[in-house]
Amino acid sequence: MKNVVKIIGAGLAGCEAALFLADHGVKTILYDTKPDHFSPAHKSPNLAELVCSNSLRSAEPTSAVGLLKQEMLMLGSKFMDCALKTKVPAGKALAVNRDAFSLCLTKAIQSHPNIEFKTEEWKKIPDKGIVILATGPLTTPALLDSLSSVTTSEGLHFYDAISPVIETDTIDSANSYWKDRWDDQSKGDYLNCPLTKEEYDLFYDELIKAEQVPLHDFEEPRFFEGCLPIEVMAARGYKTLLFGPMKPVGLWQPGADQKPYAVVQLRKENSEGSALNIVGFQTKLSYPEQKRVLSLIPALKNANFLRFGSIHRNTFVDAPRVLDCFIRLKGRAHLFLAGQISGIEGYVESAATGLLVGFNVLRLLQKKNLVIPPPTTAMGSLITHLTNLETKDFQPSNVNFGLFPKLVERHTKKERKQKYAERAMTDLKRWLELLK
Image (cartoon, rainbow, N blue to C red; front, side, top):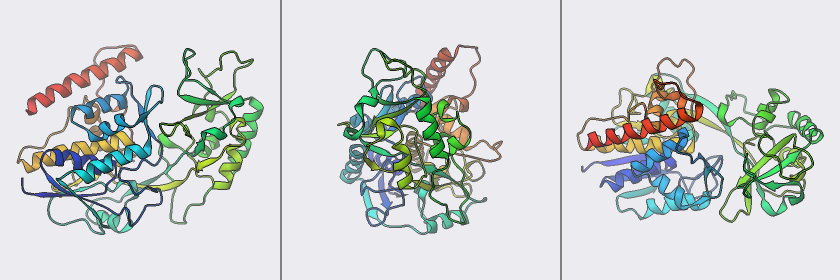
């Protein structure tokens, strides 16, 4: 295996693919524009920067994303190694100290003898050699034009918003309390900020009329349903937030005189807990309006905003039309795509596609047949999503059990999740054994 693999983009997918290949003796060159140039959403010079949130979502092995994490660990994921090394308390979720997590992967890249890192902007997809395009949802215009020129359909886009981060010590402790949903026995990992109906009414009224950052004339807003800005949710109706990020159910404060009408939750942004991000409060409001409107939440009336929310354009391909089941561009067997540009959504899913692509690039170099995990697995379900030709208006998706083949037997909801997980792990282990 004398070939050198070029990987363009040192985000989660690119780093995961590079480290998998390098650990298996493959020489790779990893390219990124950092630190010479940053996208509109990135701030840190480190690689694999987390932008939208520091949460990797559920750690429960019976959840779809928790199952995906378990599968990735079985394949030797460095993404998961660093996530577990830098995790912070977050209840049943896996959240990380984002700076420590990024630094962990950056050091792994920089110290690996089989990886050469180059600061360079690719404006055209290389014509020769094996290439993994992992430039993420903010691919530079020149490279996107090059990609568009070799695809058979037009690219698509949606907009993804970022949640604000608050300095913990500036939150009013008299109007907040630590508690996990439905758990009254422990302190909890989430800081809850309750609102009465009158307080919610005021907040809602000001939110729906607050000034938003305008889009460019050529931009058409298409939001991902799993990460809607709060003002977009609020515009759908008065109660939408009450069934979404401000849902009070299970968050009653023990000993309080009355139940809250709405609750805003905050989660630790770092190990020390000195910074908290507002859960589910992605927003495209202008910075002054974010400060004004969010300060109407009683616990945040004097809050210091360490980072305001923002919005950026995310780009992805029409996967069912342009990619094959190995996440390669149809008609170009040596050009793989990985990460969000391939048409998936989420940190964990992005890294998982990097792992899958790395796995198949290794097999390609070994002159073995390319493979995909069984559709009954979480990783296989991502392939199902990317290759479903029945999808007319393709949109990115997180991993979810709706992408899995249905179970034959009928089960309760709790039993069903357990059965999905058991079937997936059994099938993945059998698949890996057959490959050996």
